[in-house]
Length: 524
Image (cartoon, rainbow, N blue to C red; front, side, top):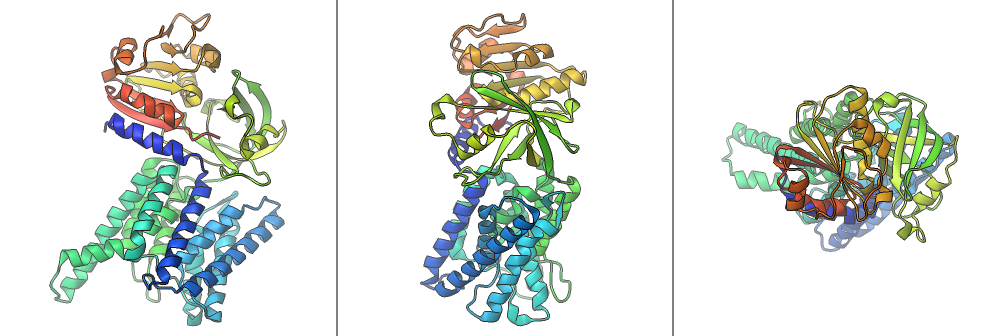
C-alpha cells in the first residue's frame, strides 16, 4: 500500500519532535501526567479512587519498586535505572485498586515487589520475558484468592473521564515507539470481540440488544486503551518484526475481549497480556547480547564507526537496528539507550559495526549519552538490549528499488548492499545519496564495491567518483529533479533513511514512487 507523501512528511516531523526525549522518559512523563489528571479528577468523583488513596498507593509503589530494583541491581552489579522503577510503579497505580487500608497497601507492596523482581527472575539471558506490571497484578490476584483483604487488580483506569487523556498521551508514546498500527489492531479486535461477547450474553438472557449501549461502554469504560498504549507496546517484550507484533496484538485482543473463565480467576487483561508475552517470546528468543568494542574509526569528519565483537550469536536482517545501552551517571532526558542501524552484514558476524554522526553544531552541549559513548575504550563491554526493525528489502529480488539516504541514513543501506554482494543477489537498485558536502559521503568504498548506480546530491562536486556514480550537478531534489535522475521512479519501491526532518522534506519528491518505506533516526 502506497503511503501519501504528505502523511509520511507529517509523521516524520512529529517523530522528530518526540525523538528529542527517550522513549522511556516519554512513557514516564505520559504516565505522570495521567496520574496528575486522575488526581485532579478524583476531587470531583470522576474516577474511582479518592485523592488520598491515589497518593498513598503511588507512594508505596514508588518506594517498593525503587527499593526492589536497587537491591536487585546491587546484587547483580548492574546500574540502577530509576526511570524503569517509576514506570512500573505508575502502571501499577492504574491497574491495582488504590486504598488507604493497611492490608490493601500490603497487597500493593507485594504486587510492586513481584513486578520488579520479575525483571530478573522471569528473564532469559538478561531480558525479561513478561510485562512486569502484568506479573505484579497477576501475583496479587492469585494471592487474594486466599487472602481477599490484600485486594486485586481493578483496572480503574477504564473510565470515560480518563479515556481522552489516555488516548492523547498514548498516541504520543505510540508515535515515538512506532507502535500505533499494532495497538490500533489490538483495540479494534478487543473491542469487537468484547461487543460480540456482550451481545451473546444479552441474547442468551433474552434482553433486547441496543448496539450503542453495548459499544460505547466497551470502548470508553474498558481498560483496552491503557493496556494497549502503555503495556502491550512495551518494546522489551515485543518480537522484532511488524507481522509478529501484529500477531501478538491479535492474540491479546481476542483473549482480553473474551476472557476465558478458569473458575476462580479468568484470563483477564493482565493474564491475556502474559499469554501474548509468551507468544512474542516464542517468535524470537530475545536475549541481551554483550558486545566488546574493538576499535573506533573516523569515517568522515563527523561520522564515527564502532566495531564490536559479539560474545554470543546475534540474529539480524540487513536494515535492522540494535538498541545499545551505555550506562552512565546522571543521564539526561535522552536516557542511557539509543538505536543504531547495523552497518555490517550478517556474513560479517561475530564482527558487528555501527556508525553515528557527531554534529559539530552541538559539540558545546553534547548529550550525556554522547559523552558516555565517547569515553568507552577498546576492550569495554556494552549490552545490546534487542534487535528490531522492518526496514528490510523485499524477499523477491526482481523488485526494482530506489534507496534514498540522507546523511547518516546511509548505514542500513550499506548493510543491505554488502549482504546482497556477499549473498550473490542480483537486484535492480539505484541509490540516491544526499549529504551536506562531498566530505560527508560515508562508506564510499563499500558502496562502490556493490556496483549499484549512485546519484550524489552535495553542494560541492565530489572528487574521483567511480564510473557508475553521478553528481546531480545542482539538480533540485524535488519531484521533477528526482524524475530527471531516476526516470523510472514510478516503477521503483522507494526506501528512505535518515533524520526524520530530512525524510519529511524528501517525502513530497518521492510521491511518484511505487511505494515508500521509511527509517527515521531520532538522533543520539
